Length: 81
Image 1: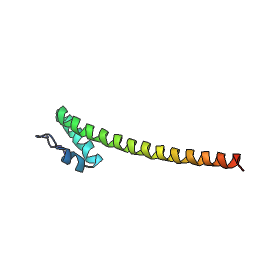
Image 2: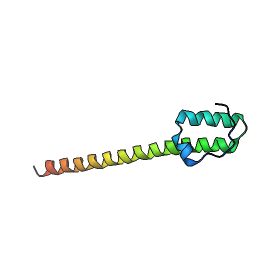
Image 3: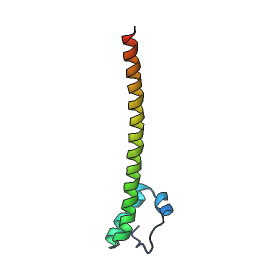
Image 4: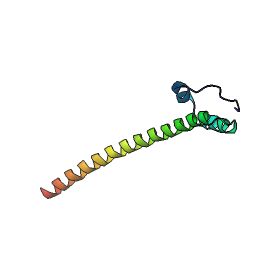
């Protein structure tokens, strides 16, 4: 890639890039001594990782809730049998 960024990317431009493209842009910006542009790429990568983590945590929370309810039902069935 090795093209110097002469602009600050918009959010839409950052969102359409793949993670690999963002890594390349980060590397290019750091080699071209453009810390502001490198920060945008790195922040987008971190935002995506954060979103994945939040989604995983939300799913696990629901699984735990369902298993807790199933456990309570199983205990109640065993007690009143």
